Length: 126
Image (cartoon, rainbow, N blue to C red; front, side, top):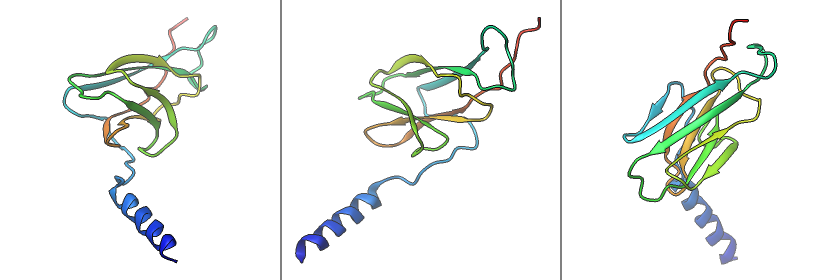
């Protein structure tokens, strides 16, 4: 009988230590962190009404243990990518849409270190 109570207390304690999910409404970045998103035109024909790929670049200067998860829409949203580098670049598949936020979350602390919305796709003139 004691074991279920102990497990319940442990689960409650762990839940209390987890930060509340963050749903960004504006771009943000902690000092020393940059997160840049670039919409990439589709090939061969560019159509701003269709989903598109996005180039994601990040840099976290002087980060002690760079382990980052890149979430969609909110800090506990789907994980799009995981990286153990303070600086890097990755391109999404063609599922981008204007305003969809990508959040850079420190895997160790669960803190959101940067968040940026996907930019609108601007197609080159023919």
